[in-house]
Image (cartoon, rainbow, N blue to C red; front, top):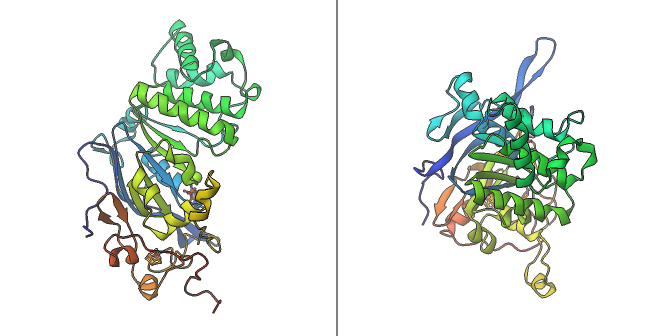
Length: 353
Ligand SMILES: Nc1ncnc2c1ncn2[C@@H]1O[C@H](COP(=O)(O)OP(=O)(O)O)[C@@H](O)[C@H]1O
Ligand code: SF4
Ligand SMILES: [Mg+2]
C-alpha cells in the first residue's frame, strides 16, 4: 500500500531538496509585463545521503540542470528549501554561501565549452585553489600535479592548453578542477553525454573510483537511463519539472513502475538478442510538452499509452511503495504493482481509432 511519505527529510542526508520550484518569468512589451512563467522545476523533493549517488534522468527540457543549479545556488529557487548538511542554503548570507560553495562543485556536460581555451591546464586547476586560498607558491604546483595524477593525467600536462586534449581528457581536467577544493558533493551534469560511447565508461569509472577514495556524494544527471545504471545507488526520473519515480537502482531497472520510466527503459538496446524479444519497445509519440503550460493532471497524460480520464484532471502524488516512490494513478490503483503497457497503445486525445 502507498504511504504519503516524502522522499526527503532524512537524518543521514547530505542534501535535502524539499518542495522546490523554479519559475523563470516571461515578460513582454516595452514595460516588460510579466505574462507567464517557464515552470522548469515544479515541486520537487528528494534527498541524497552522504556517500551516495543519486542518478537524475529525463528527456532534455525536463528541469534536471535547473534543479542541479538550484542546489548549488547558482540559481535562486522560487520557493522551497534546500538543506546542505542540515543548513537551508536558500536562507544564508552570500558570505556564508561562499564558504559552503567550496563543499559543492559541478562538472559540466561540455568539456569543450567549460574550460577557458586561453589558460593552461595547470592554471585552470589552480584557479579554485587560489580563489579559496587553499594553497600558495610551490604548494599550488604540487597540488596541481597531485590532482592531474588523481584523474589519470600526468604532471607534464599542466603546461598544455585544453585544445591539445581529447574530449575524455578534457573531462578529466574538469574533474580535477572540481576536486581541487576537496568538495563533499558534486553535481555531475551530463558529464559524459558529449563523449564517445567508448570513452563514457572510462569517465564514469573514474568518478566512481574518486567517490570511493574521497567519500564523495554525487547528483549524476543524464538523459538516458543506461548511463546512470552503473554508478547510481538510487535513480530519480523527472518529466516536465516533476519527479515521476524515485527508486533504488535495482528496483527501478528490474521493475520500473511508472509508464514514463518503462518507456525510457524500453528505449535502451539490450546486447543479448534473445533478451530483445522479451522486451517490447514503447515508442513515445511527440515531444516533451512545454513547461510554460504543462498538461493538466498528470503531466505525462498526453503521451502515456495507458492514460485514462482521471489522469487529465488529477495531479498524481509521489507515493511510497516500499523501494519505489511513484506518481501515477494507475500504479496507485494497482496497489504498487507494475501497470502493463501494450506497445503501440494510443494515448487519450490522439486521433487514431
Ligand atoms: N534561464 C532560463 N530562462 C528561461 N527558461 C529556462 C532557463 N533555463 C532553463 N529554462 C527552461 O527550463 C526548462 C528546463 O530546462 P533544463 O533545466 O535545462 O532541463 P534539462 O537539463 O532537463 O534539459 C526548459 O524548458 C528550458 O528551456
Ligand atoms: S497518472 Fe495516468 S497518465 Fe500519468 S503515468 Fe499514470 S496512467 Fe499515465
Ligand atoms: Mg540539462
